[in-house]
Image (cartoon, rainbow, N blue to C red; front, side, top):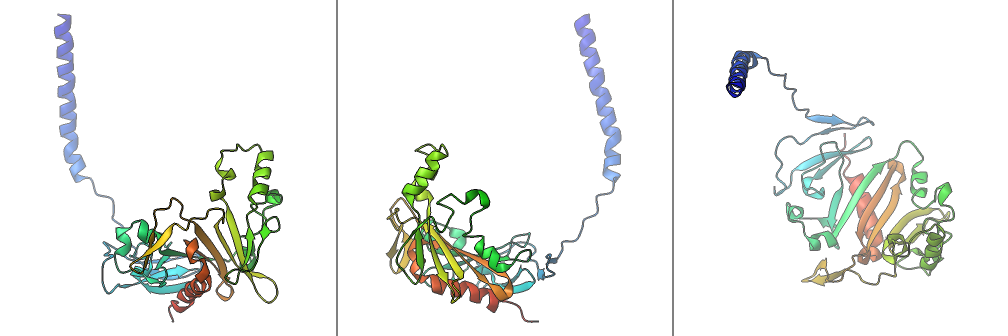
Length: 292
């Protein structure tokens, strides 16, 4: 009898739940849907630059590539979409990077970056523009080679604690003093097997100065202790070699009259062409500004 009573109670509860659900369904069907906000067709940044947004599906393979807009501070740029690293334009928030093919420094063919592989990665020159409006733009560049107060004794962070070498490619090299870096890390208690003790984790610095001895360009590349290039040429195109390492460089400079700091990333094998890369990155910024 107790078992039958329990089963009967469960059946009654299920029936009650079904009746409640049946009563609520018409109410749910009649409930108004939340109002759909129209998709914004433009976006304005903090500096007042307004760009047209790309709405809906985008075709990276479109040829000829349609022109897309992007903002760098107050400056509105207009570029074919295959210049962008995603080959469709800016991201939803307006951020973007450009991608050129080395050594031509021309954009990749429409859709080529959607078939990304190690060979394409090896010959990609990535360009990022950063508008500076809260500090002096020259100071923004100094920050790339000036240690913080707590880093003053760190030989990996300081220019004057590096090994200065002979001019190469028109640049003054400041090589990472690996022995000095390891001694400093040991004093901090770093284990001998830690990444910070390995050559591949450190950078050599290369600088170019103006007539007033002010640094105008600083390029930080995988330390020369890593002797592999990581690249080779096949049928006239740069490709990834079978070597394990792929040394890279981060190249910093400014366009002062546009208050912009530029960061360019490429393989170390391209360092010899730093002037052409710098000019191309600058020209793409200044030359792509939409004229009002």
